[in-house]
Amino acid sequence: MNYRRLGKTELMVSEIGFGGEWLERHDFEACRAMIERAEALGINILDCWMSEPNVRTNIGKALAGRRERWYIQGHIGSTWQGGQYVRSRDVAVCREAFSDLLDRLQTDYIDLGMMHFIDQEDDWDAAMNGPYLAYVKELLAEGKIRHIGMSTHNPLMAKRAAESGFVEMILFSVNPAFDLLPPTDNIDDYFVEEYAEGLGGIDPARLELYRVCEQNDVGITVMKPYAGGRLFDEARSPFGVALTPAQCIHYCLTRPAVASVLAGYDCTEHVEAAVAYETASDEEKDYASVLAGAPRHTFGQGECTYCGHCKPCPANIDIAMVNKYYDLAVMHEEVPESVRGHYFALPHRADACIGCKSCEARCPFGVKIAARMRQTAELFGERA
Image (cartoon, rainbow, N blue to C red; front, side, top):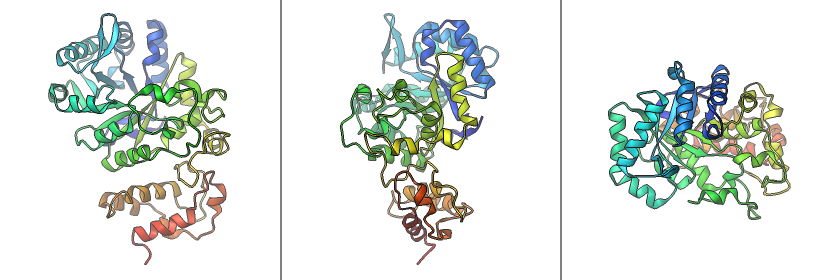
């Protein structure tokens, strides 16, 4: 298992994480089997957004004696009322639900205290300007949460969080299908049966979000990497082609700022299928060729998706990383010193490009890489 730094939290989390939602379908023994298998395979981060009491109890019992081996994302505002889940910003209700979470998970702290499911502008305004945020900060001051995070499906709300200065990480829905779509505050819009024709490339709001998170050192953990399983089904995929778990995971992990992909599991075999990513070949991870040749919705033509298909470079340039730093730099009137520092730390930079264009022949999306290398070298002052 590989581990990545989760932004400014400094936590080293497993690339493959554990999305707990499907555990609601299972009894304790099945939950324990999946959690134990995940731990044995190196997974160390788990999201528990669910408010249903039994699943919280089952997770707590499964983690008994091994709590310190796991980083837990626990949600503030996910409540159980009248026998059903209710999202709430009422501090009294949130306080009771969070206390229940601690009790049932058999712990006295949550590593990542998630401001739960903020997708709408008015919800952001109410949460940030009312007693809810004060309660979140109270939990942080008391040590009941170690870091402040937020969960959202809306890139505009995620960007606000990334620029807030106090949100350290974001749980965000990432996959190649969702990335096509413009911002929406209605999660159902992402699961429509048909996508509008003419969609192509990652929506600009999502591109900007990834770059803002990278720039502000706000780590991303990923939910819905498989789009609810529809990406595995050619008939239901908006691209008209099927992807594999390894391809979906690799897509997520090549987005800037992404640290961990929290897939959902229904059995231990699903855990193993996700973790198989760690030993998959480049060919098995290759989402780019599949998406570039898809019959519907042209994906990313002329746009670097950081997929790494351009390798190997005869000048040993990490082209995807150079392109990422270029994209981060052009967000600003002047190149930020942090971006400049990371760029010049690369052992081989854009000015080493010999213009052979062998990379361009391999790029599934038709990126004019040699020209990008010239532009990058000029931007960072390596060429007059």
